[in-house]
Length: 335
View (tube, rainbow, N blue to C red):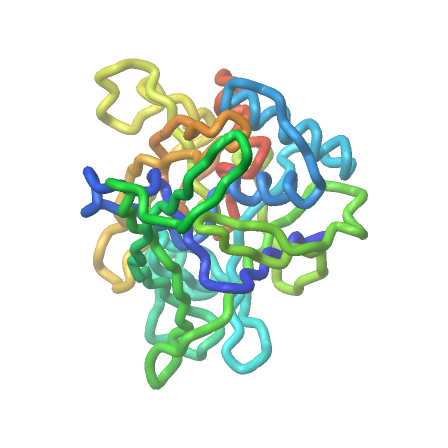
């Protein structure tokens, strides 16, 4: 099985919201794993793909088509992510994001009582936690004329901003240990032998090494479109599109994106006896660099949400089709 590996060369800066300026300096919405838009955008940059579409959503379709043409890909282009951590030079089991902050091996999720077994998995290989540090930056400017840019750099008035830095720690018997991360994606492409390089990844000019490898322990990963009936955990956000303005309850008649979902069980707790929690979040779909605008925001079920998938159901939204084609609604089978 071909696995696309994204190995950060420095701590990543990932966010579901725009970089905050002086008017909204108190808010930041960090992510602990990248959205599929970030990963497929990095693939496009690595391949030197250029986009022309003026519409941010159509730009996703154009990106998928051009990357797919270069690499001989089917849809979805990628599925994932799974996280691996290195503490002592060896990589951990593939871990699942549970509600963004925690990560757990599939075997640490009790699928009967529906909770994460923290006590039974403190071996530095099966559990992890992500934390966020907030950094501050300023926008710099220099005098520009027809002859070029010259003069000393200076801070642009009103452009103080903040951004998140993501750190990962493995959970061991004796506590939490800083760990080196890498992200794993199943890549549905044929011509990937030469896919390797260092690209900008996430915000603030952060970079990551991207390559294709074989990794043990990656199985049971599927798309919500093709998954057979059963119990699954979401690896990436499950996008939902309201059918009407006053859609309150997360039900089939209110939202597109639930056509194959029989039941939303929720994000498992970390202790037995507590019920799973159904969480709905607002996510920005990233920055469209072609036109220097942000893509639209959507609402979604977060990674780690347990779902019961049934049979049948067709996608009736072009936006959902575009999001599914780049890896949104990736699932891993629980039982």
